[in-house]
Length: 586
Ligand SMILES: Cc1ncc(C[n+]2csc(CCOP(=O)(O)OP(=O)(O)O)c2C)c(N)n1
Ligand SMILES: [Mg+2]
Image: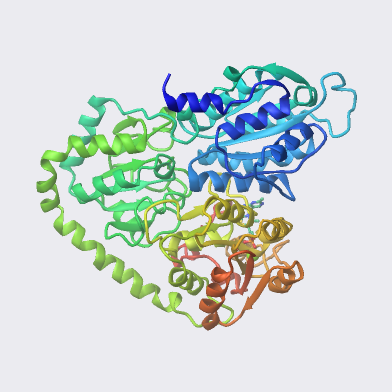
């Protein structure tokens, strides 16, 4: 046995302890970061052990937000985020957050307390059929029936969370399993280090398929890379840049794939799908699309209108059955994004110089197209309108946020506008939208998780006022955690996306779409954190700088943006679509 594994063994506990203690010990040995949850009777020994072991655990004010925070923590670190909820309502509150991680392929280990089995189904307080409710919300629900099996099943949870396409694993722990004691040996607490971060293991696409893809790409005059969130999960940034640069292939991204390469990289052509700068036009004109870590879902495809059917697709994806679900692939590459991109680069290496020469004119189009787009968008990007134009807010974020910062974006217009107009200045997870389930309410708790995952780095959460109202209580959590998090509230006094759709599709009949006029900066100040109200676009820069300068308390920057539902959508073309009954305008 090596010295390193000797040390690891010596670090392991042994002897009689509760199930809760054994669970906490396993999490300690797994090197987890801060955890998020709200206690109850069932998990009391677990909470007690966390305290005894000096582990970081944050009381959250809504378990859904704990799951959101764990999800964002995992996106920044690629290590499983940890969240917990107690029996019944605690467990059911986790559902929305866990589905975000499930759909987004994000590693999370969640823990739910369950009833004492001596009394189950006798109308115990908080009791419900939580296992059945939670099972479809996670990659695997692991019911723990024996205290002695806690270490084994915790190992299993990490393996499930980080392997293949990552996702949430949930340990459902009955009260008696958590409270009972067992004589454990040090060997019980073995850890597999390979399963502590995603991707746990890499699988390479079949070599013959790589050769077929390489032939298709080599023959293409206008190949285009379409990348999704899988680029981040696989940590494939360097491999993507190397492939794109060697072959002179531009890169378009989904909202989740932003930062696959820096938005400021010469080969980045921005967002594609529902909203786009120049990428959708490039898709239409392409002769070979290389789709990587992207499911080609509704938003990426403009509700399945893109890409045109005649363009061959090379689809590189970790979930085999995801390939061909929405669009057939000419070549299916089943495997890890980084490994597949490395293999494509190698397979095409001999012809790389010739390929770059042949595609010089193609690449020369990009700056010209981008400049034309920027000139058209300039009045909006530099608008001095009051209320403030969303494009101007994005411009100010681009100016204020340095390369190492993280912008967490909520489900409403906050995410769509920044998805289109925010520019990451470095490759990596610098932009975190919750596109797994696209719930509103992710912004603030996601910002908490990201800030704890990236201490010392600037973290800004941008959220709609509706999304902020949903989770306002977590401002108390952020204050208690002493986080220098900046929360930008897109204050349009509306459930804006709904109102914009009602404007476009229902003849301006607005139903349940308006919110009260609120001063969220004043609310923030009353909660003991910073609050700055901005009505003048000229003051946005200073407000963001003041927020970023706060190191140990959050700041809410309440930005008064347009209240005109005809001006809310990010792109002109989406307002001019011919709308049939039942269609969506955007
Ligand atoms: C939990 C949840 N409920 C409903 C929706 C549908 N929805 C999408 S955007 C939106 C408007 C949200 O309002 P706000 O957070 O203020 O964002 P805005 O669109 O005004 O920028 C709604 C209700 C959702 N995505 N998530
Ligand atoms: Mg709103």
